[in-house]
Image (cartoon, rainbow, N blue to C red):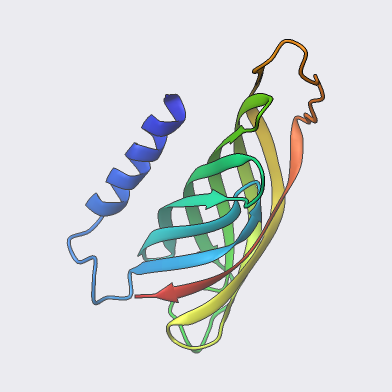
Length: 169
């Protein structure tokens, strides 16, 4: 339950940070693909060169899985004609992943550290690309049947990659 408490804290802080959430291009929504976030959507609140947000993801297939992430961005370096937000950013996120198949139940949590860049297409729309590493904080596998396969791909560090499309509301 610790990951869910952390995510609730991130959501609460993101909506308390200011009293003018709409009409100031301070809310961003995004959709993309990332490791370990899978296919995901996110909502972020922007204040100065900072963003804080929450994301939800899944990977279609036979297994039932989802991810929940709390994210913090700090924008730095360069400038853009289409946005006051600087194009380069550092990203820190906490990702909780849960996967369930016919034979196992898996839970993982990661601390993801990345560096990336926004490419503004217009004042409202842009593409974001980032790369870094995801460090495993928690890893647990439970077999549903005693004779089920014990195959478990686990590493303490994974590549952290992401690409997405964002829209400033």
